[in-house]
Image (cartoon, rainbow, N blue to C red):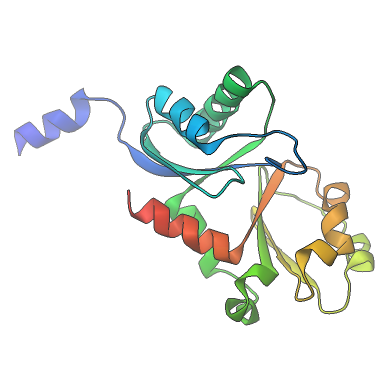
Length: 192
């Protein structure tokens, strides 16, 4: 037992599983980030078991740092390696699992692309809900819980007038993933 305790305190910080969600990548030919290069950049930061999911900037890895340091390091690595700035929202595996479990729109489980979870860099104290409701089309609904905006778009996210204007109402960096992607990212993170 003494050897186990000693080894836990003499090495690097405990390695935890983290998820980095990058904002507005590979959209319309802008901010192109090849995932192989991104994985190499993250490995160069000393992260372990680095993996990515699709081309929209989702990385899972093990690291000893905490979210603010990880976000800054990820952003810096992208700037140095690829030449552009990007917002990075870091979640623990438990945070992402909790966000999915707290989904207020159970009806989206049957069509997981109809629900987007927007992860906010900071909690939004007073979003302009009345103004957001003006842009919501038939059937669209949204809910805020702590640092997540749940946005249900049964007619398609790309057709939503509100989706195009969310940045007007939410004054903090955020990035969205549909429910299907969240499930896939959780599976990938659990496999580390």
